[in-house]
Image (cartoon, rainbow, N blue to C red; front, side, top):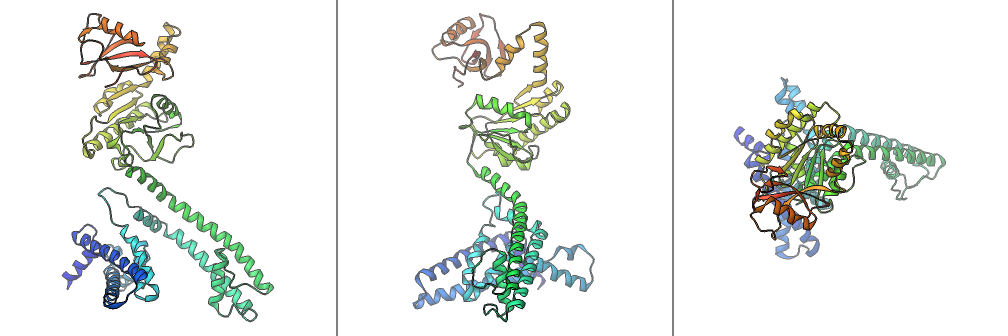
Amino acid sequence: MSGIYDRVCEALHDTQSSLYQRVENVVYGLIVLSISLFAQELYWGREGEVGEFLGRLDVWILWIFVVEYLLRLLTWRPEEVDFYELSVGERVWHHLLGRVRFVFSPMMLVDHMTVHAVVPLFRGLRALRLLRLLKKQTGRRAHNPVASIATTIEENALAYGFGLSVFAVIAIVGGLSLYLVEHQDNPSVSTIADGIWWAVVTLTTVGFGDIAPVTGLGRLVGGILMICGMGTLALTAGIVGQTLMQSVLTLREEQFRMNPVVNHIVICGYEAGNHMLLDALSHEIDVNKRMVVVFAPGERPEGLPPDFRWISGNPIKDSELEKVRLKYAETVIIVGSRDVLPHQADATTILTAFTVRRYLSMHPAAHPRKRPVYIVAEVLDVENLEHARAAGVDEVIETTRIGFSMVAHAVHFPGMAKVMSSLASSDGQSIFVGCIPSNIALPATWLDVSQALQTVKVLAIGLRDVDTGHDRLQPDPSTQVTAEHQVVYLATGQILPTA
């Protein structure tokens, strides 16, 4: 018998076992069949031999649900029983208390309501079983919104219980008060149940009007109950709004995870001063066509422009990178923090780069990419430059050294800092990299290539080797330029093709 009991427990409670999955699939199929039979009865009725057979089949399925519910309840084992050294009486108490808690868990509460469908009057309740279908995971890493909401309710059971208790106490006291005051003068209030029904309708501000106070004291009770109703509604709205907010935010993140967006830019880290980076990105790319996702802890900042998507999460946690569809991104930008010391900020940047590279190696895209994810990171301390490159950063921006170099250069050559700032800005002349136009015959000397490019308003200042990525500024005029080179040039915009 113990072997049979263990198999039943495995089938109904061990979510990791194959037997549990098979039983769940059977239950899902019966739910769909039960709803289909109910719809068939509503539209076509149950006449003739076929109708009688479908009716009996419907009843059998409903009783299978009842048996499954009872078995699930009877085989439930509270954790306290295996955790504590208990006497026989204490074990019985924990078994009873644990089953009561289990019955009032969100999904079991749905099952509890639907088993009443065996009573013909409550057959419509079987439609609630459709909620159980939403428990089924659609993918290995898919987020389950129903499970998220159910978990939120379980974690805040005390708050919900308090709100319902306040409502129940006020409804009972108000209903009893009206019954005691008016049951002799008001024919609509002949029982205590009538008084409680009136109190519930009044508290919820529905106001059917089927029962109304007729005495002065009864109207006073009604007025007090109306005021209490406003308070209980505010209390309920506050509890629900506060506790379910995180679930709503999770669902919004899940919407992005399920979105087929690709080729987007992910910015890891955001602080108040980062708006300048976002402004620069807006000048460099069309954010209406290329999605930019800001990925950082906390809620969306008020000053974040609406063109940028905000996803709350921690970039150094491998489990959260799926939120931003990282394996389908084009570029990852890692921004250093100004709220901590430079070496601490760089340590976080390097750890983020390691995490991103590890995640990408462990979770490849569904289809081969034409180009791997390109990582650009900001380093505040020049000593951490090589560490960032070792972490897998493709391009490291030494913001602090660049800024100090411009300051020092401006001391010896006044006004040059303004010139270099304009080159780094996207508003005017800037530096670009592009392919050599096809109308220039190659191979050719650097002198010939640079002169030919002047006709299209391009000032060539260097060469880039496509294979190695090495740049040479102002090479010797006789340097041979081949198809394996790209041109580093100065212009008002991107003029030469990039590929």
